[in-house]
Image (cartoon, rainbow, N blue to C red; front, side, top):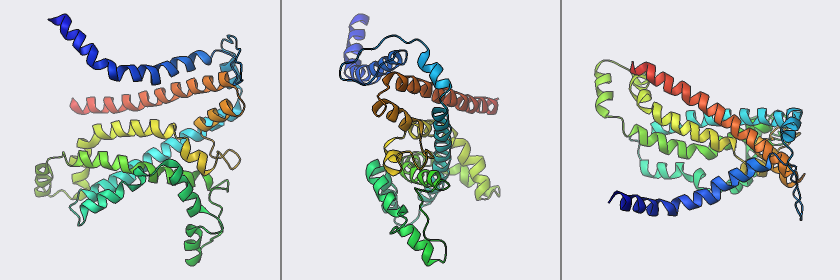
Amino acid sequence: MARSRRREAVALVMPSLVPILVLSVAPLVIGIALAFTDARLVRRPDYDFAGLENFLDLADNALFWDSLRIGLTWTVSVTVLQLAAAMGLALLLNSGMRLQGLTRVLALVPWAMPPVVVAIMWQMIYSANSGPLNALLGSLGLPGDTNWLGDFSTALPAVVLVGVWVGMPQTTVTLLAGLQQVPPELHEAAAVDGARAWRRFTAVTWPSLRPIVASITSLNFIWNFNSFALVYVLTEGGPGGRTMVPVLFVYLEAFKNREIGTAAAMGLVLVIVIVAVLALYLRSQFRHDTERGR
């Protein structure tokens, strides 16, 4: 009977396990293997084992480490701002406002749009000559000729704003679901004790949302760090590499310079970096929860 149940369990798991192995695990293993070779993107590939040569070359590649710095700046900025904006919107949607159903649907519009369409739309908004943003600033008496995506000082903040707008809906939905699980009796008891809105948020709402915030922040960090299409269509890494995030740098190294081995080594370094950052973040969250539990 036990053997029959194990066979049934394996039969039920295999349809979902096979695509994961073929589409996720196998490419990861192949990428790790290519990182230790001198593979190039040519019609008839012929490559040899290179050991740690690709990683030693990366140690002296200032452009790669600069892109990693830009990528971490982009990722942390977008993730933190997404959480702050989504928290405010989730609290608003949970407040019993009028036309709540319509508002929730409208809040999901950025999530429903493909990244390429979003990037093209924001290119039009940021246009230096005919964009509505510059027109609005000009009508208010402010400088209205800024090249938002072409200026060194404004390119990265402009792209970060688009990233926040795109990723805010799924964070809002997740936080809204968490808010609806908080027992209203806790808020009523805190209000009876004289706690104001901010005190009720810090003492009742936030402790209940901490596990959800830790989960969605971790996922957002991974998604934002691996963001490609949005940045590529908006700026292609320019101007002057100011928005050259690591994934875009790896893409150019692989498909423009045709250095597959070097690009695979870069990808492996990025995986290690993102796992290390997430491990530190989750460790601090779990340690905080443990200390509160004591």
